[in-house]
Structure formats: C-alpha cells, structure tokens
Length: 499
Image (cartoon, rainbow, N blue to C red):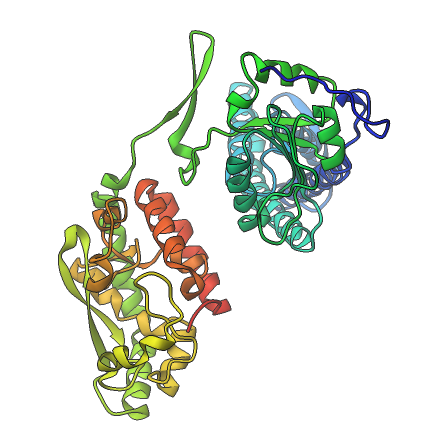
C-alpha cells in the first residue's frame, strides 16, 4: 500500500510543513558555535604566523609581487578564504558533526586544498614573502581547528549524556526492525539519535502499544494515525524508513513528497548491522539505488603492515616499560607464593593453541577451583566471571583493575602468537561451544586489546563479546587498529568493567 493520510484529531497539524521540530534549535546553535570558533582559530593562526614571519607591527609593509600591503591584510584574506572554504565543504553539516571521523576529514581536506590554492597563487605571481608565512599559518590553523572541533564534540557528548541535544526519530516500518534501531541508538547514545515513535503504515495499531525496549517509552502507531499525526506525537525531526514493503509501491517517494517543505530529515535503513561505513557504498543502477557491501577485510589483518606494527609496537613497549614490568614482577612475588607469570592455554588463529602470558593475579592452583565456584559464576555463555573472586590476590586485584596483568602478552606479540589488536583470546572450553558464525573469530590473531576491551570489558555478555569480535574481523582496517589502541588507553585509566 502507499502512504495515505488518515484523518486525525484537531491536535494534529494539517501537513508536515506545519511541524516545527524543537531539535533544530540545538543544531543551529551548535553550528553557530562552530562558525564563531573556526573564525577565532583562523584569526589567531594567521595573526601568530604574521608576527613570527613579518614582525610585531601589524602595519609593517610587505611586498606581494609588485603590490605592497600589510601582513594584517594578508591574514584577513587568508582567514576569510579559509573560513568560506570550510563552509562550502560542509564541515559544519549537522549530518556529520558530533560523531565519526568525517568532520575531521573534511576540515583537514579543506585546509590542504586552501593551502594548495594559496601556494600555487603565490608561486605563479612570485609572492615570495608569503611562503614562510603559509608554512606557519596552515599547520597552526589545522591543529587549532581540529582541537576546537574535538573540544566542542566533548561538550556535545556531555550534553547528550544529560539527555539534551538529541535528534528525535520516527521509525517508519516494522516493529522488529524498529526495536533493533532503538536499541542501537540507546547503546550509542553519544551519536545523538533517539527513537521517539514507530509508525507501521499498513497495520492497525493497538491502543497504548509501546515498543519493548529498556529505559524508553516509544509509542507504536498504525493506520489509526497519519504520517503527520505520528510525527506530531513523536515530535520527530528525523524519519528513518525500514522494511520499505510496509510503504508499498512508490511509497518511499510519496513519503519524501509528504515531508517536502518540512525541517525533517529522511533516512533509509537497509537493515545491515555491524558493517563499518567504509564497506558500504551506494550505487545507482538503472535509476535505482543499491547498497554495495565490500567483502570482509579480515584477510588484510594478516598483511605486512599489521605484522610490522605489532612487532614494532610490542618491542618499543617492552623496552620502555621494563622498569614497570620488573616492579610488578617483584610485587607479585612478594604478595603470594607461586610463579610470577601465569601461562594460560588459549586458542589462536586457525584453531592452533598457544600459551598466553599474564602476570599471576590469583593464588597458585586457582584453575583447579573453577568447578567449586561454578555456582557463583556471573558470566554468560561459556564465560566464567566473578566480581568478587576469592582466588584473586591483593596485588592481583590492583593489576586487574588497570589491566596491568596483561602486559606480558606483548611477549606473545613478539613471538607471533598474538596481535596488539584483535578478538579476545578464547579458552579451549569456549571454542568447543562455538557455532558456525562464531568460528570466524579465529580467522585473525587474537589481541591484547580489541573492541571488547573498549566497550565494557568484563561487563559484556557473551553475545555482545562475540558480536564485537565478529565486527572487528569483518571490518578490519589499520586505521581502526590505531583508534582502538587510543581508546584502550582511556578505557584502562577509567578501569570500568575490570574485575
């Protein structure tokens, strides 16, 4: 069926264009802050470059070819051109600010482009006086712009943690898909989307029907409401269409026309989850849009670049942290009897077993007590977890809190058994319970850290751990490895989910 407008009560606007989404106020305000901050950063960068290159007097005359001018005028020209280019490139577009790397990418690309244009212009017209100036202004401006964007993003994250600065979403489609989207937005609250309503246009909705998700009350509406009525009740400024068969033939096009003139974004969910953005491409074929999914990239995780990074990073880490490693070894030895290092048999890439090294954090013979403690197991699936494990020593509790017990695993990386970043190293009894999909965790080397480490650590369920590991295997990239390493440092210092 196509989208139809079913008469509603007088409280509902007559058309979508009459709706006034409240969320647009924070979006416009945030964009204004970025515009002002960008201008201040560029003024500072060009002024500082002028002082360092031409002297402290802003009226100092410099020759640009045969045209005398002051460095202050040069700075105004460069800053204005730069600021306008940032606007044209969409670096403040509400669809990219606040999450992901696209915002930073656009800022960097725009800066390089403006630098190139000014440098070529300077070379063609022999503006020799400006070369050193540009060499100072652009690196300084780029660092300042990226730092300012990061600062505003942190502020936006804090606002969203307080329940503000969210885009409200009306999901149009099936209840099951809407539930998955709503749960994903709840888990990724910092991304700034929140489902506030579901509209199933080809199903009679029940009175007082709500979506079954935790921590949120999301009404489910059917044919008793029109699109405009559903938008009004959900107060949505964004519409996400999923399961397009609920709209019928040409329904999506009709929906876009109904939203024409309204300050409401329209997005389509392809129901493709846990696939990284770089693997998704939209292709137009015969005037029809198709989503092209690149093949999983796990094969790249065995390439030279990752191996070289692993060995270099591990060697530098062990050499740099040698005093700390020796201090931990002494503390473990003095705290309780037993070996300093604990060798745990794990299953590595291709199903091959290896011995993973850790600083001993439990009493000697702790493995033999697992059966006796099974009734107190707090883990899910094949995982064994206890928040207050009686086997953990005093020093071991501190080491586990900050993941210091795992530092000897860099020796495993040098040996080639493990990687710096990868899936969590599983025990043999865990692998025995793997199904077909879970077996893909063994396609790449297991890691000291990974998505599981930065997403909750021991607080994760078995299902969540598996999903994150498969996400890593299927969407591997070298850049993602570097991001995980950086985020691991922050996760470890907060010591969340470690016990």
